[in-house]
Image 1 (cartoon, rainbow, N blue to C red):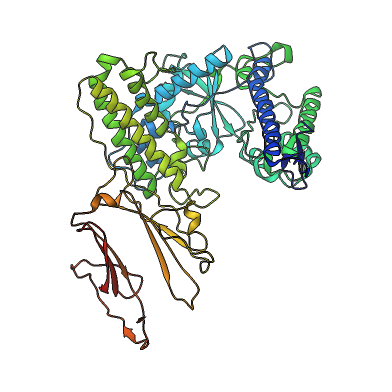
Image 2: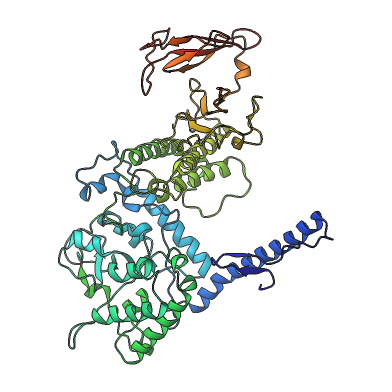
Length: 586
């Protein structure tokens, strides 16, 4: 694609041809660029299509292969919190948790079964290993891993430190579905758990970014060898685990870390040749590989980790997703929707069946499809990333997490829309949709200066909010625009700004959640209150009126101001055939 894209000095790829020939019409120039863009997209799709085939070809089969592809719970939920949000208390004893708790153990099994089914369809065989979402584990969900056929899982060493202080993370452990020490008379419920080497994993993920690839590869191998057992000691198992896609774009001296990766593989191959290091997959470690001189390590012979601590790879706790006010509100919303879905299931499952664990939608559409879609929306709303962005511990790059909040609440709205479609199609009453007010408000935008081009006061934002912002500002008041709109809350956004000070005018635009023209002929009023130090009247006298300090409105309603109180009010009366505006003392 060298004729299509070029790399600039900042490492960004752009379309190579701009077609600036003076003899080429603009429409033809755009058509040529569109053709190049389409070609680029098509080639990218071809590359992506090959990813599965490459991994199938390299996949570990039990005797051959280089890679073992793991899976993760289907919609990436924090499984311990689906089982019971009260499990977080063990690592967060001082935090307030949702009350009542969210507790749906069956959803843990559903998320695992869907993941296994999708993996099996994709790769032609069931997975043996799993990375639980965010490395989140707990003793209570081990039986679900066993039931899903998972043979080994991974998490962070902090989970080991919290549950077995002093234990080494450089060996694997056995966990099982029972709650007694030992095998409890049954070895069929056992699986291996390995713990992330935090030091080396974080080096790759964060600390190698600014170093030359040669230095990084040498340090990696050196770190591994420094943790190797001494002569005569048992072999050790080191697990390097990191987000597979996040690190590489930050490598400033090595494009996508490619040179580092090639040098690392060369270094590990050399270490394997001299017998100091063997790279293994989890399944290969357990079952052995005679062709590579690797003995089997039966799970039943491993040290048992009984009463697995409920935690994740972030500090060994679950507090990234629960415990802050915003997070707990989201869990309360989720619990409300899930309870309504469970109640609907009592009515619909005998008629339509239980579609929660079905990978594919039913054929034929209708109520069956709506019921399946309601479950899909619910399981998706259980995903971890909604809760990741709530609270103060995580913030998106733009500093505004409200879009994630809006999408989460839209997912809950979809649960009710699809569920009610299935209910009413089967002669049942629809479920009342709760109001799920926004948990996060979009960040306000402050004014940057006076208007250069004045906004047109025509009742519309044309071409959009850019008519006002910048240089004007905007703040949001959409505090009840969730799954069900509160009819008493009409204001969504308020735009404001001013022109040059010598003209001394302010501009205000109020965007509402409803069509205010429908309010004509009613007692509806919209009132804007202002607070000020003084007010200059128009005309030749230019008198200055003192600020009338009021603690309440004329109707006796307390109004909170940053300073002072209501001084003037601009009242819009909708009682007639047209809106009447009056400026008066508050």
